[in-house]
Amino acid sequence: MKYLLILLFPTLALANQCVLQDRTVTSSEVKILARSNIQRQVVPAPDGGRRCVVNFQAQINNAWYWANGHYDWDGARPAAEACAVAISRAEDAVKTQVSPSHVRSEKVLTCSDSPDLEQLRTTNPGTVAPLHKYRPHPKYPNEFWHNGAKCRWFLDSVFREQDIYTYQGVICKVANSQWVVVDKF
Image (cartoon, rainbow, N blue to C red; front, side):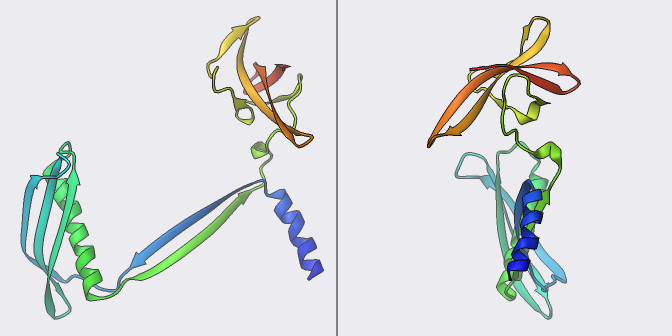
């Protein structure tokens, strides 16, 4: 077991930027073979918008089932689009009524060890890095010009002796997308 942990640790240490994506998918084996007597009605919604209410009969296998659905919208889209959403919701509801849905959950961890994604460890005057590696200053987010160079304010937090210190500083663009720390205080 010790060997397994030793082999996994360097791999995890190299992956600096990871994103966990969680996706839940529901699926049903039920197929609607036919629809009959589709009725739609557009009425005012309780929130002041509009509501499309649909009712129809859906044939699943050898039986007919009532399907009902509705969709609320602000009225800016055409009623035909809103009613199409209501029909889709009614179809999903009748499928669930006839046969339970299968639920599948997927979790995917995607990691990247690109050096471009690494965080800056120290930002002292003279440090050169792309703009996205600096934390923007919330009070002074706009660029300004200083001695003919485009500059910005930034913040840098440092953990020192059980306390967190937040410094502010100035970075200026030097070449392409590189920025240099001019001052930090």
